[in-house]
Image 1: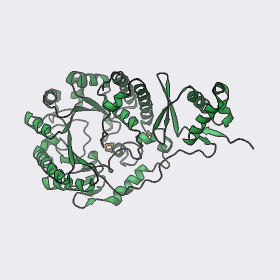
Image 2: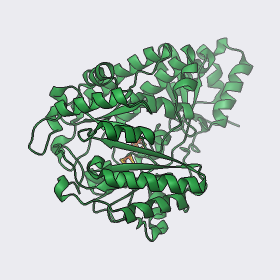
Image 3: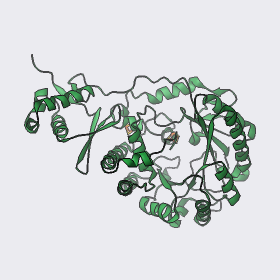
Image 4: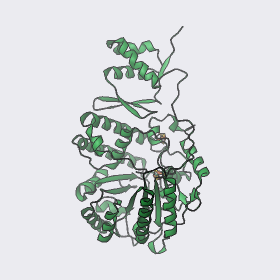
Length: 480
Ligand code: SF4
Ligand code: SF4
């Protein structure tokens, strides 16, 4: 009888070479294995031919290894469904995901649709100037906290994120919510975590002390040095805001000791200077970490990075990533948070069947109490998923999440990073195609390359300073 023909199924395994090492990513589980010489030799032979029989894997350059050792390795690859019988190969994907419970951990409260600035690239569809902004009132916010506590019954703590517009245009509500949530969580024996992202312009010493007293997690939206920041982050009158923002950022960085402070950078058309931005925000100003959001889809196409610009951004990410690696080997985190998040994902080895926590651990409440997938959808025309009075519309949300997790007929079904990416941001898809479930494939190649790069960096840190991970990887938050 003829021996069965075998294939190396690249939908279930991917090899990354970096700095003389070779790592095998087991795609279905996201587990990483370092390949020794034998492993590299056998995998090279297996990937060199479209199909082969088992005997072939013992031949050629593999014949210098003990037959038994090669056979053991081949058996491991077969168990992992990396080597499969020709004609029976399949990409392993989760079965139909049915979501029917919603153990929320986080609610984002859109406390005011108004903002005191007028940044040119702002995506918020409900954005208004402060005078015309619509504020959430306390009864809606209190019901939101009640709903969160109800949905988080099995959790030890809850998270409340204040969002806008600019959240600091509604400080009285923030103060009321903090008092209410702390009282309610104390009664329930739970913890509560508050956070916000602000344009910083309305920060005062008193406000900073209030945030410190309640241990807020704070991020500032800031795009880099003056010449870059002022391109888009402008006042209602059209003036650059760098001078006021840097003054307030310095005040916060000097005065706030409760938690590390991050900077959130939006990269839009014409802005690709990742390293220059990092040097200013991290090295000169002293932000603890700097995260970059490259805009690849926008209601206003003029703001989306072009394909060429996106490649430049990723080249900058890789250069900054190499500096992250150097720092990590010396036991330090250089504050490049996109890289740090990727290291966290690889280290935790989580398998994602959905791209993010939107709709699962997290929902966003608009000023009227409507429940949205996440902060980016408040004010959009996407139908709501319930409201804080009547609760979550489980049927609608369950159907949405079930469809989001279904990879049938998509490129994601065989993509090697499918369990790390899981299909991409719903809001990007919504901005580009008007459908949050439409797949956005326009920068998948760059994402795959980014993950390969990250696997390389991860393997180098693991081999040179593994204690970096226990010291620096924090518990993952629902939304990065
Ligand atoms: S969106 Fe692209 S990169 Fe992400 S899993 Fe799907 S095919 Fe892969
Ligand atoms: S990844 Fe996109 S959909 Fe998910 S929470 Fe973030 S902005 Fe919302």
